[in-house]
Amino acid sequence: MISHMTDRIFPIAKEWQNRPLEKKYAIVFMDAVHFHVRQDNQTVKKAVYVAIGIRLNGQKEVPGMWIGGNKSTNYRPGDLKKIKNRGVEDIMIVSVDGLTGFGDAFGAAFPKAEIQRCIVHQVLYSTKIMNYKDLKPFVKDLK
Image (cartoon, rainbow, N blue to C red):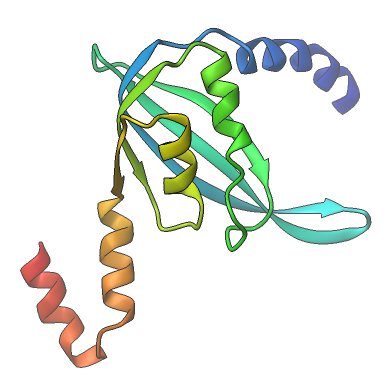
C-alpha cells in the first residue's frame, strides 16, 4: 500500500519541486527542522531546510525544502541555485538563524539581499550566555 501511494504522489511532488517561482520576494525565512530517520540500518539525525517566502503581494509560499545533514554542519549553497534556476532573481530580506554558511550562501546567490538573523534565534543565543539569575529580568525587558 505504501509503495502504491508513493508511486502516485512522487510525480506530484516532483512537479511541485520544479515549479516556476516568483521573480522577487519581499522576505525569505530559512531554518531547519530535524528528524530522526533510518539510514543503512541506523537511526541518524537529518535536517530539512525549509525556505518560506513572502511575495510582494503578501502571499506566503514555500519556494523549497532540502534534506541535509544535522544542523551543526555547514549549509550547502547549491540549494539556493535551485531556486534561482526556477526564476527567483531577487530577495529583499533574508531571515536566517546562525548556522554557518546560511548568510554567505544567500549573499553569494542574492547579493542585493539584506541578511538578518531571526529575532527568535537572537533571543535564544543571547540567553545562552547569561547568568540564570539575570535571565527573567532580561527576557521581561526584551518583551
